[in-house]
Length: 203
Length: 295
Image: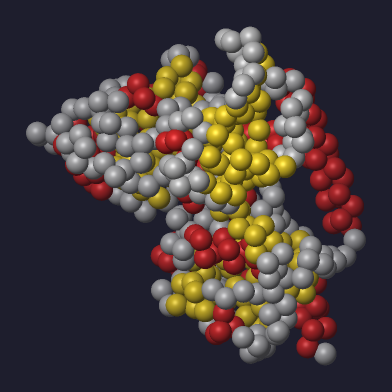
């Protein structure tokens, strides 16, 4: 029974990796496309702290188009790749006062205010336009789970606070607080796709 | 089915095969999983919405008796649990109730939120026993170090980032030096570096890595590895993040000081702490009286 389960786990793991590689190869050749939300998702209320130590609430972001990503500063490969796309989005939307970038940590015990301050500097985040937020784990995880990501990453070899899946995605929230689309933040052309979608939203 | 298996793994639970016959021939035990809906005030009855129990009953919500009422003391409605259902000829009850996660159904966005904060250990909590594979090739248990203050952290030998694993090992080396060199320091302390890459970090690999950082002096500093199964439970308890990415492992940093009774005395997150702070925490923990720090 146990052997069977382990076999099934191992096999599904191999299939998942193989499938992912195949998918990634096919995917990379086409243009970045937006991924619709799994169900209607609305930005919920929150009280968090940015990397300067300032309190940030949802009210402050009302009426803005938000570009949101999810990070844990201890992540060595995926998060830096996604945040390079965020930096590119920041550059491409320079001067657009109604656009804000928001990075939410899933690992607030590690990602304290000083840790995020350093991380933001590394990616050239503008303190007025790109908010890196930390705070109580409960608040962060509720915000991410309710507004953005499913908590169904059932991978027996990976453990992450919150068990969120698709933390590599960049989410786009319209001025009304509705999640419009997600983009694969690991793609090189993610920034262009996000910026194109922002332009479409503004029409 | 796979999902259940994974959750059971995550709970660090080793379910008995369904319908296994125990000492009494008429007693059957079933491994099951469900969500607590209600706990009676006397803690003798728990209402569980459970999944199908293969070979016994289909998914439903029902009341179960609890023999050891203290099993419910740390659980609450909406907690997802694994448990054993024991069935005899004339009675049945549940036991070995293990917390998996706290579920919140959010009606506005139709989401089931899964929180695991109650699984996270706080100051004063007893660390459960975990079996590790030591650099010597022997099995070692964290409870083997009771009576000593135990400082442990996590790493893997292939870790290339100077700010991560090597930094933890250097900080441990410096802290040990501080304890060894300061007069009137208690001597009942121990360091333990735990690799979460057991496949690569076989005992021989650990031993040679250890010797480099210990500079040939193995005094009160052991290196060991933890199995994937054990790590699943430990990660929940210590808020660990371990994620295989490419050839490497992305992980956060958790350094824990246990008092001589095996309770959490201090947790140092990240890499911003300095060896003086760890040495101070270890000295304080070594001098703390049994019971003084208890919750």
